[in-house]
Image 1 (cartoon, rainbow, N blue to C red):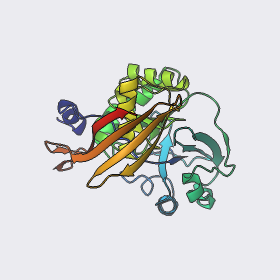
Image 2: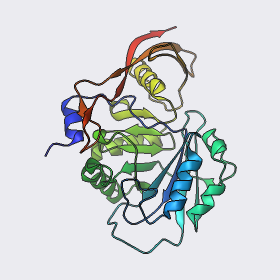
Image 3: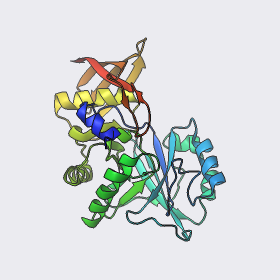
Image 4: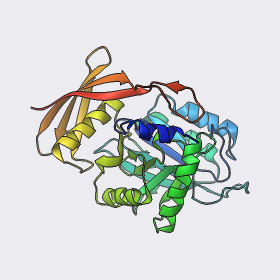
Length: 300
């Protein structure tokens, strides 16, 4: 049976500049089964889930549920929920964590401040290795279950203590997909071996361009420019590059990418449609998802 991930591979669809955009992630542990719209379809109180989603709207914060890899039969509610909050704008990132008895407590957070990179003293600073978030929600797309769950399980068995399943990272057709904190780079079409390589690189302060979908802290034109400069320069240090982007009219952007050593690049990006049509998710009609193309790259 053909899947959206199989067709995307067959079409050699680029991974670059396809990461979900979020300056800050709010990740709430919720065991048990998840529905397609997990914030309102899980053991999390549906009213709380909808309220969290509404509070995050327009702030740059993205809310998702997480759980440890393994079997997820119906179960008793957890006494406490682990909460991870991560700001992923390069050069300004942080990860904080806490436990809450009731996720409704999170509605007291200042979501606008979180999106702007101000944690307000929430929880404690994360210490330890990279946090791996593998998309596994089969109720949203079967590729995430078929490909994501085995990857999350294998990473956990290999001894990576900070592996979590997550409800949604976008880009089902690039499964298995993984977002890695603290830097917020998303990756696609991973194997267990390449995922372990990504985690090792992240621990050393680097990213891996080969499987990168982009950093969630950048908008998609910025993700495309970041990727292009990394390929041209060979730079993989996560905080080595900074960028600014401005619209140039008619689906075009000019992105200035600055290296910490003083080098500067100007990158022109154009938005187009992916052809031929393909489903963005299993069971959906074929469409032409947006694609960011680098039309010019020059060092200045």
